Length: 261
Image (tube, rainbow, N blue to C red; front, side, top):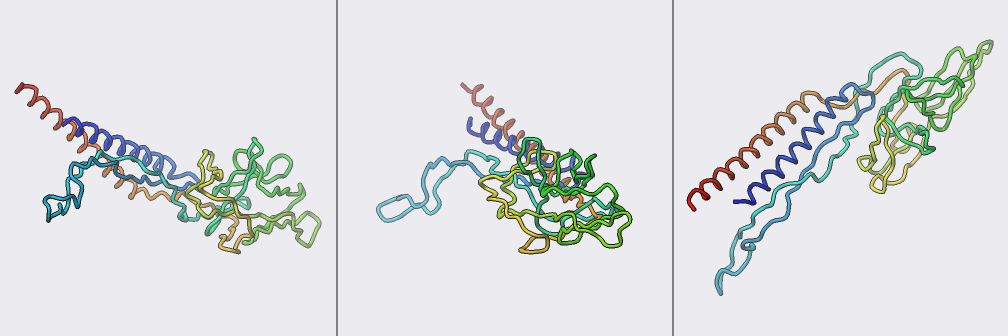
């Protein structure tokens, strides 16, 4: 009877992790460029009381056997990089990626991080930076006398300066993709870092080689579906309650046995 306590406890722990994940998704429902996470579970090892196919006599075998599971564990929490809805803002430095790819920003540590959040600003030197002041890579500087700025779908940045009639190209936004984006390391601030699981970053021009287009004046909303998350929360809550009842049932049965002794 004791194994039932630990088996049900593993189920409660797994559902607690799922609830934590759902809560994080819902908390970030309004976070620009946020990608929801999904919990994946797998069963634990089995106690083989009688293995399937074991001999039951000199001429017969057991068709199914007796295998007692030891519970469940969280196998992975996957990032789902599906496209979020695009919201038009009209801000010339609000950018979104329609399709696959990431923007590159330089962290204070000197390493390049990757993001889907395209809410950019200009710092005091005219550099294009994100909301935390990390500069877009490759670095792009906008002249102080710029009247208007245009960013093409291929990431080409052109500006029209005061007193000029022709636009001048001042930079090129390069996008990056990974063979396995779900293997990226989320470090907060809407940033990801590459790992051995994600593979090396592959840099390219927007709209080419499977990379998405850059859209100026749009932001990508979170891809969290509130209704879906609420359903997941209810399912996790019910599973948690059922596992707690299994613990209570096992405890009651143990109490019955102890009273018989």
